[in-house]
Length: 227
Image (tube, rainbow, N blue to C red):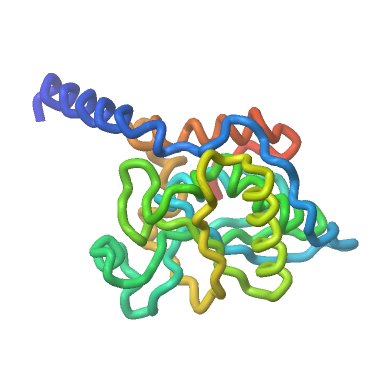
């Protein structure tokens, strides 16, 4: 492709992304209150898992992999069956899957409630129904896939707490549903924002989330350079 045409294509893509930039980002620019109902920090190191869906998994992963206490993250699909857990199928919006991120964390370093704080504050806008900015469809829905009664209880209590405090201009639409299965996304989706920093979508939709995490929660922020 001629350089001038490539440049014009990139500028056009950036313009389109900019038009949707407000919808790509979280609904609040200030930290939310911490969860009143939360599990205490564990007395010894260990591993627990949380699964969140909040729009395109590129951005969700790029946030959580920069949170202290998080040991690993994986972009994937949840909500549908194993037989339909491929990107080409999920994008048809017929599989029941949501683009999701599995977060493995050390409960002696960070609590599930603190992960929810990050999820609702900077990872996405929980008031957008079946979309995040330019991405529209149920695969971009806001969802918490819980794996225990404790995760369910903490999630529901926190949503009720935030709604009661009216911290968002609209009600939270995040689903709180049991995790029936998590299926890893294709390898090229893993750490996508890290490996494609110049992608216009990443620059407009995802980099601001990372900066928001750094500014709002400096005590939780850590640099991430990949595996």
